[in-house]
Amino acid sequence: MRKIREVLRLRLELGISARDVGRSCGLGSATVSDYGSRAKAAGLVWPPKEEVTDAALEALLFPPPPPKDTDRPVPQWEHVRSELARKGVTLALVWQEYKRKDPNGYNYSYFAELYRAWEGTHSYSMIQLHRPGEKLFVDFAGMTMPLKDGKTGEFTQVQIFVAATGYSQFIYVRACMSQNLTDWLNSHVLAFEFFGGTPEVVVPDNLKSGVKTPCRYDPEENPAYAELARHYGVVVLPARGRKPKDKAKVENGVQQVERWVLAPLRDRVFFSLEEMQGAIDLLVKELNEKKLTDVPFSRRELFEAEEKPKLRPLPASRYEFAEWRKAKVAPDYHVRFESHAYSVPHRLCGKTVDIRLTTFRVEVYLEGVLVAGHERGIGIRHLSTVKEHMPESHREYAEWTPERLTRWASEFGPCTGEFVKVSLARYEQPEHGFRSAFGIVSLSKKYGEKRLEKACARALRAGATRYQNVKSILEKGLDQLDDPPPEGLALVFHENLRGAVYFGSELN
Image 1: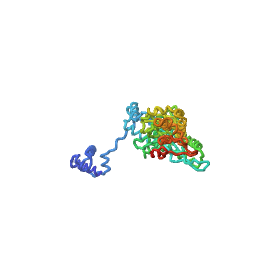
Image 2: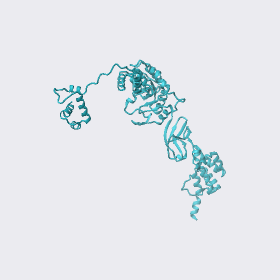
Image 3: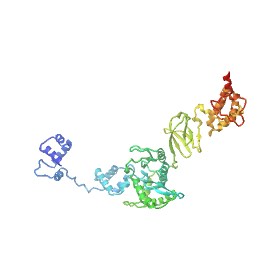
Image 4: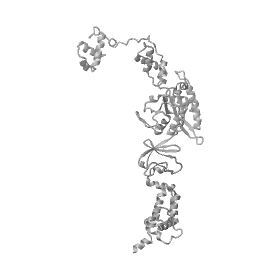
């Protein structure tokens, strides 16, 4: 009040302008003018004839507002709350309808003030924050449950998934072996089926399984999680980091589950996940059917009456879990993972693509567009190649089979055919040896069919089954030696091996 007294002294007693008074007192000129107007309206002169206390001065300058008119019709606040729960309905719209019905009713500002005051004294405020069927909050509980191995006696800590609807706080609980992506997505599927429909929005925590890149303003969903959202037609809005109010419903649901479900089971020993889930289901049922403290309804009653009818129907088919990976297309126009290789169009060599893996299918996407699809291989080193993915120069190989190559090579001689057959047998996938087989046959163009036949025979006797072996024999002229090697002696061919022809040329 000392500053206000100084303003009144300068303004009323000395007549200094509002701007100069503001500069002197460190106030805005509008504030100074407001103090002067209030003093004038109160009939105050300065200096006052008698000593005025701070309380009296404040009462003169800032009198309390006049009492509100209590004779006006009071709205039915329960009806207002139920109307606000409907989609698209705002407090302003409800007030307009109230005003049309009772023209002598409250103006909007006081209407809103009265409603907020009523809301603050009723627990219904927790329910009306979200429309029925609007949001589902999901998270893993902080507490875990021990699962005992009947053979080893070791304990494994089981994770507890909790889902709670935004309006009725209806709760679903599932015991999971981990918080990995598979358990996370499967828990959502089972939760949707438990509720009998899907909400508009799913609000998860910034869990790694659900959110690939946590961000306060624009978190990036895990690709598999985004696919589940598309399948069920829901929107995923992850809670902001360190903002527990964003997911207050599930936080409260987790707390209730820990108190009324997990704590009562703390001393029980479970030997299977199914046994544990059965015990959890019984206690969750009791929790959902228990009357809420300040509302004469249970979670189940609120859910069945007001929320379940607003849920969207489940899709015709259940979501199939798919794992997403990134891979770079190799120069042989295949992508590889788990020792398996799958072809893509050869023009994509060097590009990074997304791979969608299901139990039976492998799909390759480039910038969201499907570019290749294969049946998922089983076993070791599976190879799946589509002819249309090959460049033109490679497609000729697709027409060949090991049998056809062997028959063709046999036309140059029986040993040539046998060598090609043995050479192809070295590969788990014979197609990988086609290039070598074509190379062997092509040696006939330079050295002739007879020399090739003799070189293949010599290589077979030595147990050498590679293209380089036959090529070395022909280059060194070893095929022209008449004497076969001694029985049981296997020759090893390499670049430094020289025969009689080489040394004969040195003497000449």
